[in-house]
Length: 125
Image (tube, rainbow, N blue to C red; front, side, top):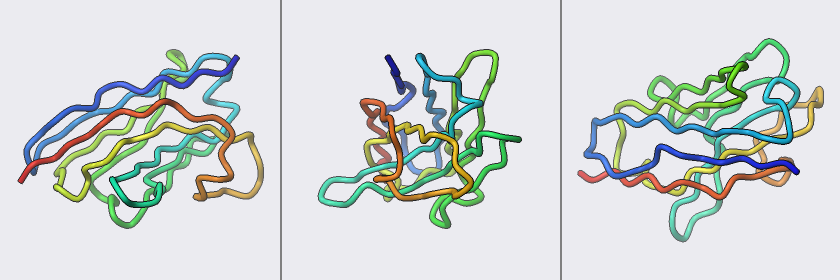
């Protein structure tokens, strides 16, 4: 049974930092595309960042490029999202997701196979 468990969310002031963790069980983070998405109230779930299953190359959405960084620890089977210079518009529930390895790299939520329960991030001005 696959489980993705997020942690590390919380409330911070604008300009602050948080690091989210996604602990995976039932799958290896080196055998799946791993990604972070977020969903703000009244908005659709949006792509934040992903890490490719082979080689670990990363891709970040324009809205977070230069401020957020996705990474993984293979030994811990855990994926991270380091978030710096946080802005109020980053406020959302953040979700970890996994997609079976394919050649096509997707940023569409519907293409991901497994999801965590989400962790709330609130950034105040």
